[in-house]
Amino acid sequence: MEIQINYLAVLVAGVAGWLLGAIWYSPVLFYNAWLDGLGKSSEEVQEGAGPLNYLATFIALLVMAYVMAYILDAFQARSIWVGLQGGFWTWLGLVATTSAVNSIFAGRRLKLYLVDSGYHLVTLLLMGMILAAWQ
Image (cartoon, rainbow, N blue to C red; front, side, top):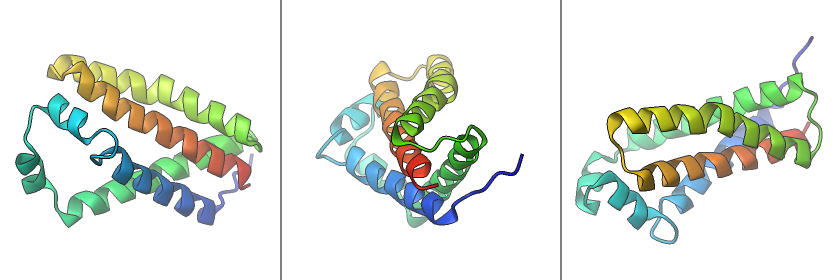
């Protein structure tokens, strides 16, 4: 089986996930709920946020998009609907579960799990749509 990756689609999906994160974790959507879930102040979060954090996040999202493209191509996903399904099942089977286990044992608040896991769900749905439609 030969896997064909559309690298431009991977880049667009990675950028889309990164931009979604900028909106998701902004005061427009879930910033305050996220802060409350973290149990930190805005100042504490700002102190730890540097350019390397954003670069590392972008690289992680590119890897996520690449792996999603690989999986979708392996299953010959060629429609938005199948891309959505791929994003959902990837989230449910890998992200939601591992995040839940980590959150439980780290004693994290449910609110933090819901905000973070919700972001990953929407990101994977978005990536799945972009990557499956752009084969």
